[in-house]
Amino acid sequence: MPNDEFMSYFRKASQYLDNNEQKNVQEKEDKKQPAKDTQQDKHKEQVSQYLAQYPNVNLDVLRNLNELKEITKQPKTDEPDEALAGIEQRLGMPEAGETLRQERWGRTIKCPECTSEQIQKLAASEQKDPNIYRYVCLSCWITFNDDSNTEMETELPPLYTWMLCWYLFGCTNSIQYISTKLGLDHSLVEMMLKYMQKIFKAEKPLTNFLTFDEWSNQYGKTYKKAIKENLIKKEVLLGRDTAETPADTHEYKKQKNNYRGPNPKPRS
View 1 (cartoon, one colour):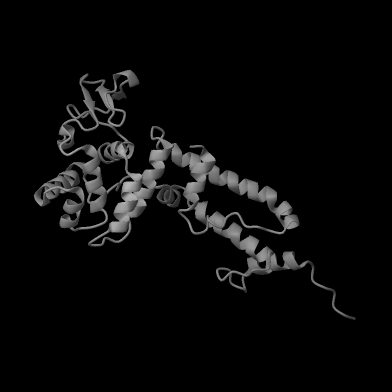
View 2: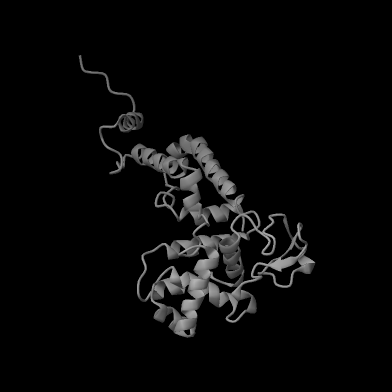
């Protein structure tokens, strides 16, 4: 997915971004065009910086993980049918594999035998599963997979079911609901959840994975502020005062004066 399409997706994460492309009077738009282009360049630069944090993750998968985390950040309910539909729409085997990697390894893959961080991913020709990566430890020279030395390695139940169970737990505390939707025994679901909480060292999905919105708040603090200020200025220039712009502010008066033109000369 090209960066401009990816940017379009991420714009939905902010209420200010959806309205970033305002339809202005043509002559005013022409005057504002250089600033608009500069602002868009800044947005694209921030998206590029975010993507650099996950260089080995497919863009479609990264987009889906962003949306999956947003789903699980909503308040839990006893029967999250709408959340389940959203999860099933976005969770495939590529997302299941990437979720396992993000939860188990995070930014640093460690050898399950010697805990060395000197790890190398094997070539594509040596990979057995496109969604579960195979590695070699450059310290002890063993080979291992993302799911090595875990209960998920047996594929009973399959990795997809493990991850669906994990995401559902981010939406509900009802073990009965999860077991019913997965078609698994209540006690098995309890075991799976306790096990994932233990090996992932987390109470909910994707705790250490940053969505673009979270990353921009943490590392790109000017992201939303700059967009919000730009929109306020455009609204004022068009004569549509916004509730978020107090009428007695210096910026408001400045923009209104620019829009109306110079003050008329007093009558003699």
